Amino acid sequence: ISKKPQSTKERQSVLLVDEVDIFFSDNMYGTLYRPSVTLPNDHSSGQILQLIWKNRGTLSKNTKVAATQIVKDRSVAGHIATLRSSYPNLSDEILQNELQAMLLALKQFPMDGEEPR
Image (tube, rainbow, N blue to C red; front, top):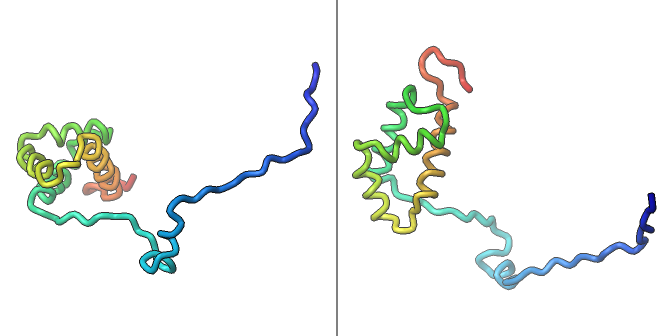
């Protein structure tokens, strides 16, 4: 077995930062960076949350399947349509991911007689 000789030279690395002037502007320097958006809690999102809460015992344990069940539920179809018209950038993927996150968080609230998961 032949071994290649190991190089004693270490590679130097360089970090390139673009838009560094933004980091040192009055709006950014010394403040926290919190990229987020606040969505108003309109009637539509509240109805979807209520559906999830009321049906938490019958929804699939698989969050992906349960999210699909919610999207297909006729009682919230109009509310989902309202959300989509209010937020044109709300893709199916984002909606599914957010529903899955809600369902995952819901597991921390056990039903009567259940142990927390």
